[in-house]
Image (cartoon, rainbow, N blue to C red; front, side):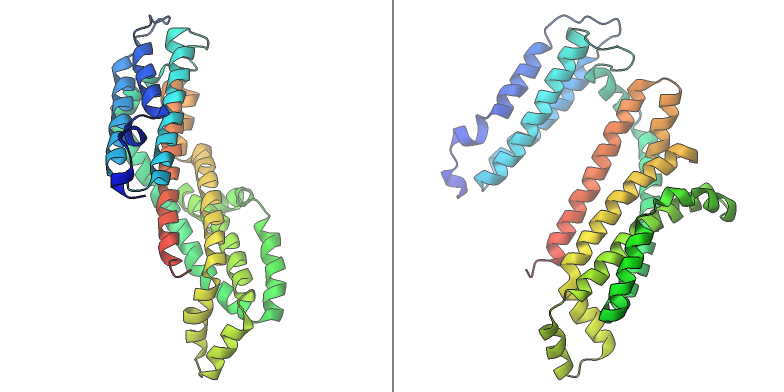
Length: 310
């Protein structure tokens, strides 16, 4: 559907816009908590989200894309409404454990510099461990999978070793490696290596024989065969393993940071939960979700780019 055919109602009169208005109206209800609610921060967050939605509505060229963005915004506003009513307005939850959204967003704004350092530390660990795993697993998987006999046997070995939770290696890592940061990199490496290796071998084994035979007829060299032809044909399966490895890596990253790290998103959450500061704990949980969602959004964009030939 072209931009001209999207009506004003389709663009600007949606459930999300109604929920935004309801969220603003409930701010006028009296508070029933002892702390200052700081509603301006929650309202400011909602206004930014609504402005983004209106911009997307004005620029949308397809109704399906606009509906997706509007539905996400509607879920966000519904969550804010329920959160505000359950905390600040009706005090249905324990104030210390579940502060109102205004207080949480105010704390988030105040902790931006600190959070930036922790996010940078976590992403650096992920990058080191994940890229090392990718550099090791991808060529090894191509070589092992190229031989059907060796590849089938190696696939079972990879599945067995991949089933072992990498956290069990932490005691050995602490004994052998010089710092807990290097132990964290090792855990992330192991978490990513086995899924990528197994997916690469599986992808190579599933490549149609006619593709390989056609390349051999053209006297293609072994390296060209592996890295230009087989790698391209196996890429969809390989990316599935890369996605699985990235998911497990983030889970183990936060776990490792909560065990013994002195920086990172997991450390931020664990440190303030131990201190009983649940406002910052919720901030940490929200930031973890935002960062991981952003990373996977970028990964999905990269995946679509690499598979644009399909």
